[in-house]
Image 1 (cartoon, rainbow, N blue to C red):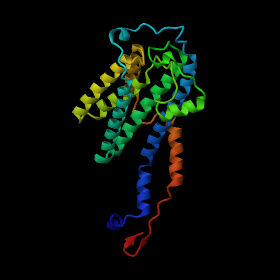
Image 2 (image 1 turned 45 degrees about the horizontal axis):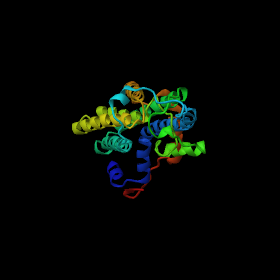
Image 3 (image 1 turned 120 degrees about the vertical axis):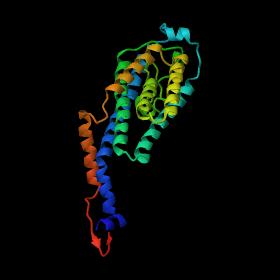
Length: 273
């Protein structure tokens, strides 16, 4: 009978595999849901920080040691492009664990860790930039644009990860640095068997942090705070799903259980149908 099961895989057998992996999926979906909510909160807050930013015509940029030591280099587009590299590396390591190593538990922990840390930091960033407004640096925010619709601006910021929405004044906590440091520590933890990748990611992270300050996108303190908080959050965040997200996991589990039909095996002749 067991040989027949292996020889004639049925739809019910496939649904059985789906049910066995449902816990992994619901945990990953819950972590992703938390990250999406944190991103929406951050993008919505950007509308208020933009309006609350001190008038650049009245308030000049703050004195900054990084600005005094590093000349202006308008190459922020390199940092924006390198974010894609960091995310591709993270996706590649996750795919290697999931499909090459076929280690579903490891892939599950990797997914949870990455999106939980990113979500925690973005949530903290949203509150930080709302509480304190710093003067604009020497960039395009010296002549800020106007926001015509906060809802459209919020959605645009979420879809483009802050690339196309109107926002200024989101200082004190660098969002680019969160992504960079989260990816850096992710590679350090889960990519140790690829030493060249670890070294390349480290060099790219240092270059991006330098360019963030050189392009005057953030003050040096913004990058420093983001580095410290992201590092500590990564170290303090366990891989299993936290208790406050268990209801979300249960919600996804109910959706999966209602979608996947009950297992039923029927034998007809020499085969499984």
